[in-house]
Amino acid sequence: MNLSSNGFEQKGIHSLKWSIMAVLVVAIALVAVFSLAAETDAAGGKCGEKLTWELENGKLTISGSGSMYNYEDASTPWIKKSIKEVVVTGSPYNIGSYAFSDCPSLTSVDLGKIQEVSTHAFSYCSSLTKVEIPYSMKAIMPDAFYGCTSLSSATIVSGDVKDEAFAGCTALKSVSFGDDVRVIDLNAFDGWLCGNQQTVDR
Figure (cartoon, rainbow, N blue to C red):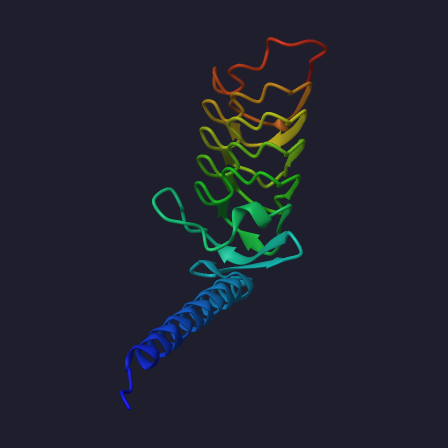
């Protein structure tokens, strides 16, 4: 009686294939779980030496005091596409550069007692429709709100408005300035005064 090993070999290969597939499925599942956990865990942390942030249900709250980190050459610790609202509490000095640049779902900003909006802090926030600059403001830096194409209203009660701070905000229809606005650079609103029914109050 001759016993062939082919059947055993085929069964072994078949079993090995299923084992490899099972390992791959488990590995993919683990990657997905850890990725989801990473996004879920990224709900808060530091954004300055004495500043913290917390993101919950689309609302990002900044608390504490002092200066915020700049993010021109670094990724932000928050997921930008998840942010719908930014609220500043306490007494932070500034909004760091590029901190909220290109947040596509951001519709509302409460700057609290901020004294400076840094370069490109809110640039290209395409859903932002209104901005109110507080009395505490000292300077709105160049390109701070550059390219916010849905921005239709800006109230600026204090601070210097630097070069191209609101450039490219093509939907602007109303801008109000307070008595404490000392300097408005020549190109601060570059690309704006070319539409209809625009009003400027001083």
